[in-house]
Image (cartoon, rainbow, N blue to C red; front, side, top):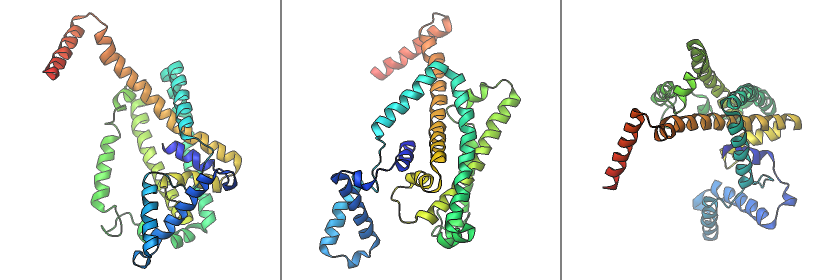
Amino acid sequence: MVAVKTMRAMTPKPLELCTLEDQTSIKNLNEYQQLKSRDATRLSIEEISHLAELHELNKKGELHSFISYTNPLWFYLIYGLIVSIYTMLGGFHAAVITDSIQGVLIIIFSMLLIPLGLGKIGGFSGLHASVPDFMFMLFGSAILNDYTWYTILAMILANLVSIIAVATGMQTADSATNEMSTRIGMIGGMFTKRLIMLLWALAGLVAIGIYAGKLHDSDLIWGYMTQDLLFPGAIGLMLVGILAANMSSLAASSVSYSALFINNIYKPINSNTPIQRQIIIRLLKIVKTFDY
């Protein structure tokens, strides 16, 4: 979903090419944002009624800040088809190749937008001038910052556990050639990702400085920054990097889940060894229990 939103933001349709319905949707969103930003006590009865109507339309997803050439339905179908084809044809080998490529791309593109964005808003001094001070606080109060010290501590502990304790963690670690490769790949890779997340946070602050109050959907920010800050060739590479990052995750998950299904369900059911017969009998007993 985030991939299609990013691609939609990177492929906007000019207003003059939009249908009358699309232009009305954009116009209504602008009116909705203007009415929301005003003091509610100073709105007339007609404006309050119109705001309520626009609010309902916004909840239904009928208000848009722009119209894109990208059709979400076709995107999902083609996207899923591509991942399915190369995963079924290449299996684990294909997943490894795409993971290696996207790893390099995501590191490069995570850093690329930051200097360009800082240059647009006047460097770090311009960033501090355009972004509220409390957003730079790592630890803050419950009023000024959602992330207090105990919230961050809880997130750190949760992340230390989830680095390994995820659905694909054990089979991914077990696929390494030796224990040292597992240590470097799992621990080194996971902590490198956490460092990259700091770059994403900085890019988010830069985006707030550039687009504060202009975007209604935060998922569109990366696409907008790419469209505004990069030249055409780099925009294409950024799009490739974003799609490859998500595709590689889907491919790796597909291989892992299919292996789990084959080894834990398909093989026991389609085998006549004593141990597997016992598993089948136990499964049948569980099914009968649910029937009762």
